[in-house]
Length: 232
Length: 314
Image 1 (cartoon, each protein chain N blue to C red):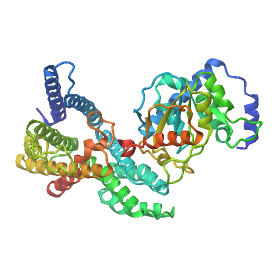
Image 2: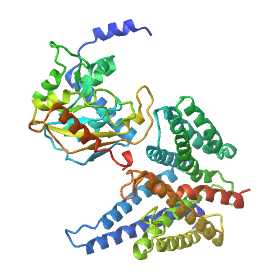
Image 3: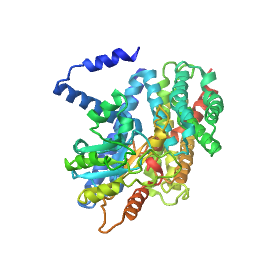
Image 4: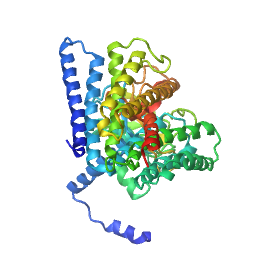
């Protein structure tokens, strides 16, 4: 099969009726969630907070492309509808399937990673989403952690967001084992058990410096590593 | 009552015991003052409810016959193996070997039992998987903790897949005068193993005092061990009529099953203790994980299989 006729067909494709697009989104989302839950034996632990429908930024460690699906699946459905994952545009804009999943199914907030300079504000999509009242799932390490370290240093974005939105609770989320299920560079998952632990909400303290805030939030995440891993 | 009715009789018997347990639990719950929840009683209720579900699943598998029993234990192996390996050291370089363990070794072992190839299924994991999985892992060129990683993977396959597969393996035994009744032998093993676990729990809760292995497990007591093993032996002897054994033979085999089951629980507790967890997982409410429920079966099944094969088959 050559790629050209495929693209041509896609361009000529008529716009789908809304009810069909909605149904398709629902079916795909339910399938992805069910697969994630069964495939990883997902255990959601609400340790530091309860699943309340308030505006929150869930910040998590990052091991695998499946991470936000897992956090998303761990949320009760009413919260899921108002929670959007923040993902790298470079990965999730590539190819029709990824674009469809990122935009239609997960309603992701796509940001340009490594975008700098006075004319481009990489956090603009995040601010727009927060202004609309959405909750977010973010990965402050900025990239998937493939090192032996438990957690990479945080990028500064989460500090600026916390500064601009002091009323939004920051909830640390520890994801266990997704890096073993599907390590970076592998394409077949193995069915080990995964867990997602929700910690105590926090926010930027008055007068707290950038460095102190990033250290504190990173330590909050590190302190949640469960003894015994996902089985505990 | 002809032998054809035996499976239904056994199933009805198990349901009657569970019904008694449910009634006793409700009576006990009445005596608990309101507002003072009892964790032991809540756990007991969860355990009994889980037993109802497990009994229903076993009943369905037995109704589906040989294929149903094979499929059920392949599933049990799969869930056990994932709980086991989740707690083990694995590295990214083990990915192919782990994938092969779940999706090649496990299905192949059950396939070999399904086609009744004793000569291969009895050595497939101890010989072929034992040699080939380290080869696959070594191809990735990562020597860090290699021995730990490969030994733990092999141990997971031996316990969760090889040992457990001897339960449906009983269906392949050719016992004169017992043709077509293999599922009853499976039921006998499961009832004695799990009965022994339950009876050890009951004896331990009633008169348990001295801990038998305090550094490994807080829940096993001398009284529970003696009472549980003795009453499981009696239970097995009383079920001789569904087996190819005489009553004293059924008692002796039940004793072996109960002892191996107890020791299996001890070994698996030592592993859990080392990894800092109380339970292997959480898929069976009140019991913990799949491995918490089948740890005794892992150690009892191959021994029961080989004793029966040596003394009773042609």
